[in-house]
Image (cartoon, rainbow, N blue to C red):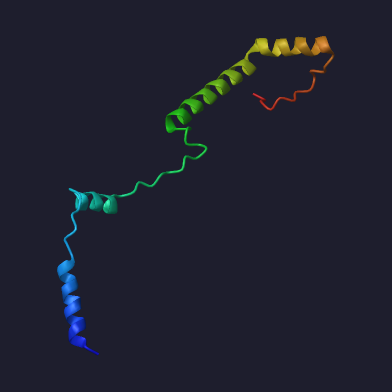
Length: 102
């Protein structure tokens, strides 16, 4: 086993190696790719369009519609029109079945 020959061949192999020429800014580009923070994409839920502003507007509309409905129920014209409707179609109005007993 001629170990000296093997050692000399190994050292000669180092002499035949050339330096590798890298493209300009290769290190910078590689470092940017490796260390960029990846943004987590938030999955859009079904209710994502129902923003707080829209929720407030919906609440105001529901309150206004309810206020108008209660005002109309308390109106005397409403009572007379219901009585007229009931008598026209033969429905008994003697029994109050309204959930709004004011």
